[in-house]
Image (tube, rainbow, N blue to C red; front, side, top):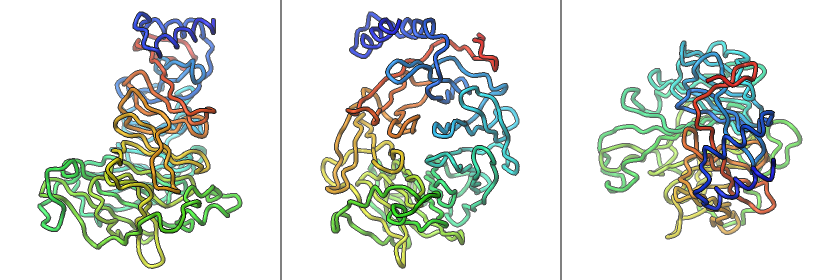
Length: 420
């Protein structure tokens, strides 16, 4: 049985078009009815969670799980085995067991219908966005004791609720640091860069609110236990290889279309501009850290608090060969930093030389690096796009693995039966 499944996987992987994906999926589903749940993914079309059955290299995306309600939004924590979701009926914020799709609790005090949500690197915290109310809500105690930690007002950023679109959210593990990208229409700024580039069409605002742990990578390597006990991926960086920039107090948008401006807020809630990064494409927090890694068209930067001011340190780039980054991923315990380019390259960041080393190349267009079960496994795309592509950095040699999806719009009931 395993030989048959493996042969089919090899055939499709090698481009043998005589093996239809539907046949492959049906064969795996038929021959592995008790397949374990390897991971879970959210399907926006079906508004439901879908289990990834089997093991990496011989897995399939199974039918949707029946949560008893449609899920308008969902974010899966593979490390903690739960999903934070928005009920498509009443807009309430709920937690589900990812393996079964069952609702385990709701978040008291969270207003209904957030427009976006995101989980922290380890899944201990989350942030919800309410752009029309110009508010962010930070949750902690996930998943066992969900509670509202604090709210942040977006009024200090100048973002207008009816003229802004939140693109990306990120939050630190203790909920003390939050990052946000917003597209916003603004008037022309004569001080800004010339218009007409991709930067004038895909701008973002970044907010980072910081408090709690010391706020720089170096403070985490020496910690013993607690949320800050993680390795320092920047610790090997030699002096002089990064460019330190103290951001100006302003900075904004090319030629009158959409603004790009970054902000950093400390525990007081006052926002400080992050600088003139005009084409931010991705942001990620390492585990236990308040420092944000930001991908821009010119390279990858580290945003952190210095002795007297907010600082941006250039980690990789710029240069003629600087790739266009679509997503960032950080492995467990912050051992490695990865980036996925829009062209499908998965790269490991070499901090000693400020270079991108390509370790795998995907026949896909990555748009996420969502960490899966394991230390350095990342899903590179979302359902309903299929197959799912996974970068496996846990393998002896880093590899890319595809996961076909069951094409039938079935659901799995709470008893585990398949229901059409």
